[in-house]
Length: 209
Image (cartoon, rainbow, N blue to C red; front, side):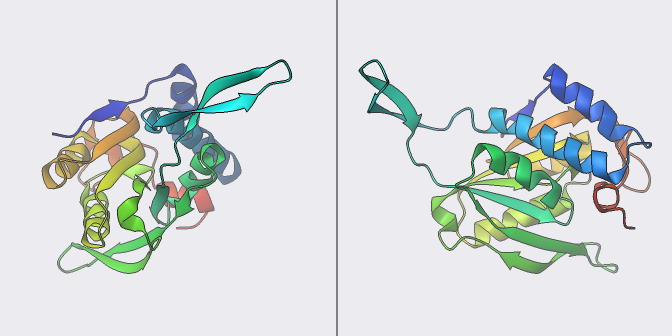
């Protein structure tokens, strides 16, 4: 079974509280989402491989560690996932960015892909799928399916807020995908919203409904 890592750093907890507040406007909301995503990025990248290289400091030659060149990709689930991309790119600017767009069929209630643009070498990259909310888990599980269908084998899922139901769904469908989250909330309500949650992340990021 995959790991679920709840990153409860004090700075993350503080910023998540501000994000939840209904009085936080879109400008501050976007900045806070970016900042929390960057903080989550430290945990996401904790296991990146290193190699030893020789450099010369102003004092002497020495050996030191650098990233070993592992290829990374950031895959936001449109549209809300876009709000998390810049924060992670601040840490790993060489990462490629793909996009997956999904909508829910009103009759079948199944996620349907309407857009997918990925790095050509997706099978060679460690992919970080980002979406602020993991509610029912349907969209995240579908997005991971689409990536695997295109050859991806190394995937992590990163969310700001998750419900226990959403985590269980992703683990059931993709037991090989680790989940990183800033807060695991209480439950879903009858309308599929996370409680206490933060409302609709896409609406709050972009000021549209």
